[in-house]
Amino acid sequence: MTGFGVFSDGRGARRVGWRDGVDIVDLSGLGDLFSRPSLNALLAAGHDGWRQALAAAPTHDGPRVPLEEAVLHLPFDVADYVDFYSSLEHATNMGRLFRPGLEPLLPNWRFLPVAYHGRAGTIVVSGTDVVRPAGQVKAPDDELPSFAPSSRLDIELELGFVVGVPSDGGPVPPERFAEHVFGVVLVNDWSARDIQAWEYVPLGPFLGKSFRTSISAWVTPLALLEECRVQAPEQSPPPLPYLSGGRDWALDVDLEVDLNGTVVSRGNARTLYWTMPQQLAHATSNGATIRTGDLMASGTISGPAPGSEGSLIELTRNGAEPLRLRDGSERAFLEDGDEVVLRGRAGEVELGEVRGRILPAA
Image (cartoon, rainbow, N blue to C red; front, side):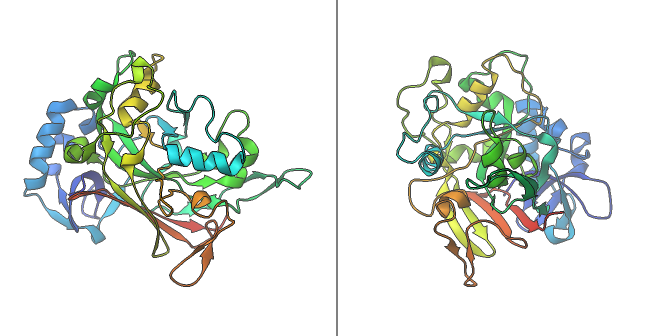
């Protein structure tokens, strides 16, 4: 089982389907909620609607469409997109790369889930090609910046949650997380490290991130992940009271990164320092509303062991130690023609993969 998605097959309009192995079960016969070109109506249906859908979908006797014959579409209309920075190991690795000899974590990191607002309009479904972005870049020895295609194109292995029920403008504390969130998707937040390095001071990521973010075609309901919920790593110092809950929402999801047929990283989402309920609580703590279709991603998930890092910049130590692939080639960062596949599994539940191939700059 994987979850709910949106597909078409040449014999009808876009509609909602249930992924069952190598087949898609057409759910449009279950009513109007499943005959629409996105999951948004289902997302907004709330717990009763989610429970009924999850009870009916796996046993529905509707038409079955082979996955290879279907066209998969973006599963929901993305309202807003927030990208967090929730992995202690990732934040530490990046701090050591760019602030050698100094404390790798900035003073606020252990007190709040650091995040930035991304660009919802450039989120695409798995399988969509990624055109190499161009932008301003400046090497340390360059006197002036130049405009050029990125030569340090990277990936970010992330887990995102999808908001179903909107809020009324009040904070959503950790204990109310499951009232609002429908499910999760895998996320690849493609990153142009050279563009990002020149632009990010003082306001953070912009064009180095906004050109493309890929998500899986299948949204896995939270209800399918109950058995993989575990206790998150201990936080020190203890978080402020409004962030003190949600520590039983770490997800034991095995993750891997495949580059051109070679698995270059294996990790697990349970290592995240800030959990999804804490992320949502912080995002709404100032009165900001959430809407149906909001996507909030974890940020790069990296583990403590070598080979569990969720980005190439970490795996290759900023390019100093290139990866050797199965065909004998080496990679520091992505080259044109490279294909990256992210996968996740929680026990018997397989999350939808995220696949993307790099095309030359336009």
